Image (cartoon, rainbow, N blue to C red; front, side):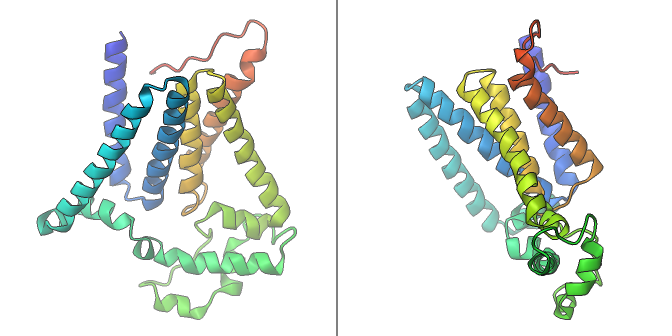
Amino acid sequence: ADKWLKLNWAVLTVLSFLVLLLTWSRASFFGLVGGAMVFGLVEGYFLIKRNARMRRRIVWLGLSATVLLFLVNLWVVNSPKLQSHVIIARIYNTFYLSSALGDRFGAWETSIKAFTERPILGWGPLSAGYTFDKFLDPQFFNRVSTNLVFYHPHNAVLEVMADLGIVGLIVYLAIWILFGRMCWLGAAKGKDRLVSALLLGLLAADFIQNLALFDTPSAYLLLIVTWALIYRLNLGSKEKGTPKLAITLL
């Protein structure tokens, strides 16, 4: 049963990655990479802490992955045919931040200006469309090919700053820190360490994605489910008679 479960997870992981590529969402790709790195660092840290023999394996694994990425980069750079492939070109160009995020810089600038004018309580929820028109530098349209109008600044942190001010920002960041701390303590106590590391990676992926995007219903749904799992793993199990958390493939 475990063999088939692992196979199902592997197939779902590959399919999910392909779907992510086909969405052409740079922010989601940033989130995936960042979340995977956080998960790897947390899991590696606790593996080394609990088993000194794993230290050499993890170091070699990290070095091998670095060398592999370097060789793949050289291969792509020196292969015009690969660079012309739509999906490969999209992945490769994602990491050129000036081109990947160029049209967002103007919206970010308007949010920063809005925050500096009303730093305490902000301009109110969902006011990005108004502040974009109010603080936009007309030179912005010289840097983009179309007359874009932003109703969100494509950065959740800046949106909270402009809409709710420093008060809202403190509350917003406190929520992330609280759930991140719960995941870390769960992993440190050995309470489903792998699950805690995965949930921390999910939190990191969502937060990093929102640095170049805005909240959507689907992202909110995943975030709420993640929060519920974190609570269930760390606090829900304290209730008498509550079974241990188990994640199964549905």
